[in-house]
Structures are given as C-alpha cells and as structure tokens.
Image (cartoon, rainbow, N blue to C red; front, top):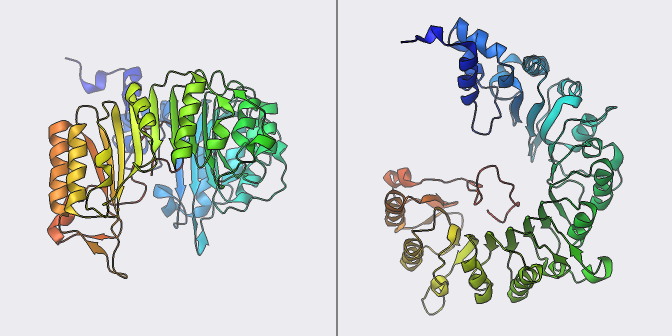
Length: 468
C-alpha cells in the first residue's frame, strides 16, 4: 500500500486544487484553502507554494474594517504588499479578482494604499475582474497606458453613485479590453450608456453577455444592433412606462443568436420591436394585461422554442395564455408571486392551475393567516414532482414599531420541513420584521436575512431584482 508520503507531487497538486471554493475564487482566510494548506506541514506548504494555479484568483471584501478578512491584523498599509506576494506565486497564469468596497450612510470603505498600483502592474494578465468601487477609485484603476489583452469577464459597480454626465468613455476599462466577452454594469453610466457601449463595440466585437440598466427604454435595441454576437442580455429599465420607443428606435431588430433575455421593468413597448428566433430563456416582469400580452406577442413573433420561462408576476397580472405557454417549456419559474386574501376570504392564488413544468417558485405574502399557509402547502404539494426550489417571504403588517407575531409559524415551518424531507425540495423561509412566538421557535427559522435567495442556478447571470 502506498503511504501518503509516497504520493507524487502532481497528485497532491490536483487534490489541492479541488480544495478551493466551489466557484474557484480563493479568499485570504487562514481557515480556507489555499492558506490553510500552508499550515499543515512543511511538505504540504512546499507543494502548495509550488502549485501556481492555487494563487491565480482572489476575493477581497472591504467593509468597516481597516483591511479585509485575514489580512486586517497586518495593517492597512501592508495589504498591498501581501496581495502582490499572493499573485507572484501564480507564476504567469491569467488572474481572477473580485474586489468589493462598500458604502455606508456615514462612511465609505477606503482601499489600502498602493493596492490599485499592484493591480495595474498586472493589467495584461487579468482574465476576470469584478470591482465594486467609488467613482474616483474606478477612474484611478483605469488610469494606465496599455490594453487589458486577456480580460474576458468584467463586472463594474460604482458604490457611491457619483457618475458624472460627461466622462471619457474611450479610457474606461471596458474600452481597453479587445477580447471582452462578458460585461456587467451595476448602476454605472446611466446617463450615457450609448456612448460607452459604442466605445466598447469599437474595442471588441466578441461580447456575448451584457448586463446593464438605463433610463432609456430603447437602450436594448441599440445594444442588439451594436453587438450582433450577443447571446445573453440582462437589462433593467429604471424609468416608467414609455411610448417614445417608436420615435427613437428602428422598426425592428432581429437578434439572431440571442439565447437568453432578462428584462426588468415596464418594457412592453420595447418588446414589440424585437424578435429573437434562437431564444431559449426569457425572463420578464408582468405588471398588467398589456405587459402580459406584449410578452406573448414577442414569443409568437420570434417563433422561438423556449426551454425556460421566468415570470415575475401575480395571478392578477399574468394571463391564462401566458401560463399555457409556460406549460410547454421544459422549465418554468414564477417569481415574486403574491399571496393575498380577498374580501370574500378566499386566497387569490386558488386560481393558479397545475403547472407540470414549474421548477422555481418565489412567494410573497403580507398575510399570515392560516388560509394563506394552507394555500402554500396545497400549491407546493401539487407540484412536488417538478418543484425543487422554493423561497417564501413573510412580511406581515405590524402595529407601530412592534414586530408582528404569527401564531401559526411553527406549524408552517414543520410543514415545510416535511416537504424538504419527503419530496426533496430546497426551501428557504425569509421573515423580515417578524417576531417568533417563543424562543424555542427561533431554531426553526431556516433563513432570515435579506437577499438570501437566488431563483436561478449558481453562477448563472441573473437580473437585479426579478429574483428577490
């Protein structure tokens, strides 16, 4: 039998690589790989330091602390040197970095001195960048001469919202990335998205995934025209319903290779100008009968064969025709689905038919009555063969500043746990501003935190709040 000491270096390296987090991005935490591997023994330390692939990614998060995670005890001014050492160990591999800074009402996290210089010194080796920074830090990071020649995936979020109406788009990070394939904006460049996108298109024609938001309802039309190879578009419209699309947009845009389209906001008027014959996944908000009809018309006009349909709607806004279309797809998601008790005492979702393709369900209710709980059980039990992911938000109206108390909550949680064990469902329960009836019941709370749920599979690109 071969002892542990006889295992070859190559096998150890493969084992160490499998010890990284599921998404492959390492944190500078002494209790996680790769730093944990350095502490086991001298042999493991030598192998870990020689396995360069262990050090080609890093996740850094700045909140109220002077540094981040395990590096903070060393002092804010030594952080840049430690990060420089980290990436020196990767021995020429392309790099992945997630850098998140946060803004609070009275305070904004400050990046360690010299950190941006460390990042700039390796600009030609970045393959994946996710940066949440104040506007000035974002400008400073992009202030270099050269090209991000290896960058394929870029996510940008300006945390302080200070984005001037006039800026040099041509010098931005995304305009310096000729191989860029995935580009995600948070609240960035709302005032001038077209100029920025034009500069991106001039730098790279390889973009396949784009996520952005805008006040301009015709922005998706410009996007599809600029990027003919786009396969996934995630767009958040942050204005009100607009009928000006007809005057600003071309008569029709055919997105021939677009396979995934997520639209958040009131964009029924915009959808009438688009067809997507290769579309496989559509996600839309359905606010009323008009937007429901617009979604149906878009699907029929595109003559596409959908594999998945994600609807953010309630029974008051979703049409029977749209639900029938949902019966034909392989996977159906109903998100932000509202439970309400009518004046007659019946629950509004009783009208929801059986949906054999329903996989993901997100429920919301301000009513903590037993009737609503019974309807939740009925709906979940009826779809136990197809439904695998459920998220329930209970936010009952309380009196004054006192949290609401739901006497039926223990019965609800016990029933949900039975479905988890018996049907194999993944269920999370979110209860903001809810007081549990007694201390023992607190242990039954499976999830009680904001933004705890993602209706889409892990690491899949998702809209901003269509899943919240």
